[in-house]
Amino acid sequence: MAASLLEIRNLAVRFTTGDGPVYAVNDLDLEVRRGEVLGMVGESGSGKSQTWLAIMGLLAKNGRAEGSVRLGGEEILNLPQRALTRLRGERMAMIFQDPMTAMNPFLTVGRQMTEVLEWHRGMSRREARARCIGALESVHITDAARRLSMYPHEFSGGMRQRVMIATALLTEPQLLICDEPTTALDVTVQAQILALLDELRQRFGTAIVLVTHDLGVIAQLADRVIVMYAGRQVEQAEVHTLYGAYRHPYTEGLLRSVPRLDQPRSARLATIPGRPPDLARRPAGCPFEPRCAYASEICRRQMPPLVSLGDAHLRACHYDGALGPQERGA
Amino acid sequence: MIRLVLRRVLAAIPTLLVIITLSFFMLRAAPGGPFTEARRLPPQVLANLERMYHLNEPVWEQYGRYLTHILRGDFGPSYVYRSTTVNALIEQGLPVDLTIGGLALALALLIGMPLGILAALRQNTAWDYVSMAGAMAGISVPTFVVAPLMILLLAVKAHWLPAGSWSNGAPDHLVLPVLALALPLIAYVARIMRGSMVEVLNSPYIRTARAKGLPERTVILRHALKPALMPLISFLGPAVVNTLTGSIVVEEIFGLPGIGRFFVDGALNRDYTLVMGVTILYAMLIIAFNLIADLLYGVLDPRARQQ
Ligand SMILES: Nc1ncnc2c1ncn2[C@@H]1O[C@H](COP(=O)(O)OP(=O)(O)OP(=O)(O)O)[C@@H](O)[C@H]1O
Ligand code: SF4
Ligand SMILES: [Mg+2]
Image (cartoon, rainbow over all chains, first blue to last red):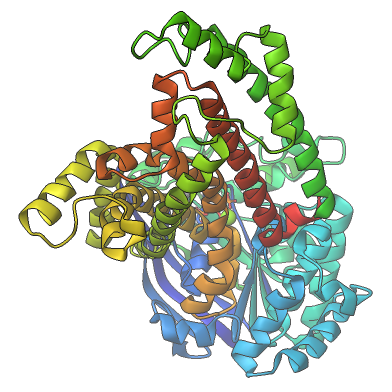
């Protein structure tokens, strides 16, 4: 098993709002190993983005992170601004969902790339430019030199995301966090971007965190998966284990709602009945209980702990019996 | 760029024509005339005056004559300030308005922009609340209250500054009128700047800039400032003209010989040519400054530039 790169212990993210606290992430324990692709799935609002924004020190002003996050053994949670400028974009980078709005419309693509090398590597603009041309070529953007002087609005969505990836990798960070990197793109472009991430991960050995609510994306790229529900980790497993032998009712719901070709795109995730819970309240029992077909008395009273099932498979659920497909298979 | 200017100038011609026509006939439709208000003139004198200024001709002929004069840049004689032309009055008054307006605007940008930016950076702190409450006050208390108060406190009581008059634009005579004119502008600029800065700082591309590890100073100066200026530019186009025309109150209170005063006098005395001249001037200013604002927009925003 590869050595761990990022260790998250007891991470909690809480927002202060006019209506009281919102508990966006709770008791999160996980690790990212060197060079792996770790997927994180869950419905909208399950705390996926806030987990990684907290780690990057990018929470909104009303957000607080607690717990411990170690990168290569060194504590990085809640670092002061100065230290963050040496960490972000240098040892870990993050790209976001909508490449349309994630780039500054007022600056050339070149400027938005070279500034990374100027700041982190102390390069001159000239040196940086030369490096950026190479970086664009490595994400298969042709005519790179000319495109550096163009503005983001002159690029297509897919190209912009390639630029974002190229920019993130300029400093060869150990960790690349991709928050819904393909959600805003159409299907063919989505496949190209995923293929690109796979290629780069093999070339640079960068560990990649892939946040998405699309299990199809996870299946293509990830080695391991974390399933999030209401700010909690409910299941963790290797990808093939999860698809073949998941052990959490919520994972089952997610898998059942993976889009099929005969269904419109908008139909995904529509098959888990009910809605995610209100994060302003902290239920005593299992947060999935109101929507769970397997719920019993204990589920309402007691929060199920995350326990190991062996084989790097963990889950948080009281139910011991067989889940849906196993029944159907029998 | 040049094509944009040309197109806008061409488009301005019909606009101006409509303004000229409307104000021309509305003025004539108002009761009374330039020589009926004051003491009654003997009929013979009145007839002579009207013939001299072609007021005895049919209104269409007057309109045609006025248009041909306008084309030559001639706004005609003033009926009230009998010995001068409207052009001369504008030449005399405009520099006064440009001076206090320009200074007030510069002051507003110089103070309002940093104020707004700092308020945005220190969002929801005491600094933010105090400066924004101040701005709210600056906007809601009208000039005709603030200006006399300033005169009372700083001129009459403390004797620090002169209470009024132009004195050929001597600096100490400028301070109070410029301040009075600038106060609401500072407030507007600060509020707009704060609002747009807050919005830009919450935008995804600022998060990207931070995720790249750039120091906060670079994030703000390189990534946030320019986009945050855009709403200010849209505001400034009309605001510049408002400042120039809105100085009427300030001119009255401080006794300054600006255009606003002539305008008021002219309107009260049915001085057709004077009122028309100032109206056309203001219309041209509005068109010009909106064009300048649009051009500036294009220079700053690459997306607008392309179109
Ligand atoms: N600034 C904030 N103030 C209050 N609540 C917030 C704030 N930011 C996020 N939240 C809440 O935190 C919860 C988790 O949000 P998060 O962005 O992590 O969801 P997500 O899993 O990434 O969902 P999505 O798939 O929609 O991106 C949400 O319920 C959201 O409403
Ligand atoms: S703990 Fe109970 S309610 Fe929660 S997922 Fe398991 S069976 Fe369902
Ligand atoms: Mg998200």
